[in-house]
Length: 331
Ligand SMILES: [Zn+2]
Image (tube, rainbow, N blue to C red; front, side, top):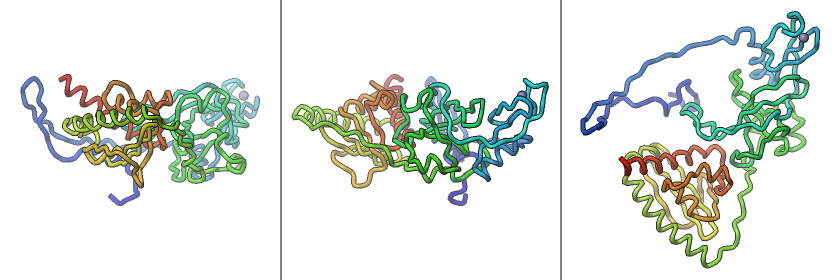
């Protein structure tokens, strides 16, 4: 596979040739990896102009009824049902609109959408349109948590740099995160946004109690990491995954390293972490890894801050490790 070319089936979803044994009720069973191919092509048919406009012109098209003038997006009606099936015509609509309701955020996705979470999906009414359109949304300020995008939040449509003519070619971000030039620019692209805009929360000054609490937590974390490394199921959850995570708490800092099936924890600061986790109390992290709490929940309620939205997948993997160890112990 040539580098940089994305495939319909992502590389990590393709199992290796081989077999393994699985023990169920004291008996060993042989399990084989096999494949069944089902690729298909589909035509966008009469909806092609909408998708071609997204891909080639960075424009969003709606359809306007030639009789009543209502503009619907996406333009998937060639005749107006309200006007005795009068024909519609394609018109360009604006790229700014408002959320018509407070949208949900997805944190747990199937493997197909793992790379996209957390992502929000809401309905916006774009300027010049009379109906709302479903669209994914993100924030450029770190991780997506409830409260950033609400009913009435003004959003700007952003175009992916690599477009294929699919609805995923576009997403939106709050206009409050953009400069006036970005807001007025037509066909604003993903690469023109500043994704490093997440402001790391400031931690209060540490007292002697905080330092003690951190040291005790770190000790417990070391023991837990040994336990996780000793659990085959947990190790499999971080196979082929490598990340250096800087953890900052009030009482001290540590580095959590995910290294292809092994976890490591060291006190101190990494010169070049892949991403940063900030929590006041190291126990927030510890509880998540020990399956006493949830890291995701901690992120949602803002007890845990993560510097990069896309690194949520690493948090997800750590949570799976915690669950695997808990299940292994139980089983
Ligand atoms: Zn009409």
